[in-house]
Image (cartoon, rainbow, N blue to C red):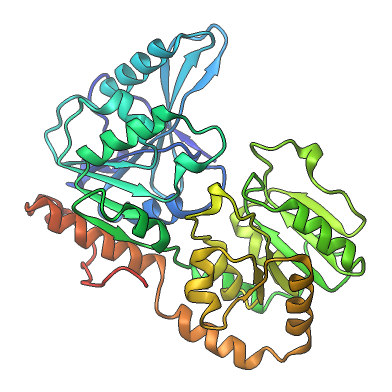
Length: 404
């Protein structure tokens, strides 16, 4: 259940601020907090130990409403603010309304320290004149290569690079692409919530909508969009009609009617994060059938270590940040064509898991979301040159380096 908060006429104050000296961290996100549990949720749910976290999402448009900010809290300790705007506004009015609503919510000036944390460069259009003590761009994807990206997005990203103090990237290939565009760029590939996904190793009972599906099962979870090679999925399903393909995730930016329909392909829709280990427990192989296109050029799929933590062997197309390090270390099998996928899966099904799993656990022990956040926060404290943020930290700061 979401707790609804009363907005203040000027500066935002979370319920914890009455008894806390935490700085305010304002995140500008193109992703809904309640959509898919991924990098922003992992990081910002840990940031609440050090900051009062306010996440400002993209607007929702409804007919005839008065512009206002819908503010709610989440159990993870973050506060979500969504601009509610009337339908039919001109683009410049949408920008102006967001600017004014945010200014009213957080105040143009704040008596305490304030961090701005960007996931979308487009937010620069209505936040560039607001002051902050530290500006961070967590560049988790190369948004300019996604379907529908505009030149305006590139312009806004250039403006954000000019403004921000720190740039974090969601993978090492993206780091290589961005390292010369800013003085302080740091690669932080996807980490792992090991305790959550490793539950799958001990779960014996299938969810109801998976229980009837025969084995062997190949599974995928994540957003189903232009990054998925649906033709490859269809080809493998046709080559092995006795294999079952369990596909979990919301369909966005592509027409659901284009998804291949076969008796052995099961589209189960989106699932809650807490449900995923129960599905993974019943899969024989994880199938990461990413397309090799502009949208996947720099991705670092979070699901790679999540599959491995669940004890599920993986076959993936040759995504750069999967090949290195997972493919090179023999933790994930890499295949480009349908025939190669079939051969790799057959090899996995025939081999014992024990030696592979021991190697997986050794690799996964090197990184976690806790370590990633601690490393990021250390860089944030170093960048401020001020002890204000450090005094507010409620946990020790570990001098760790970004995960390899």
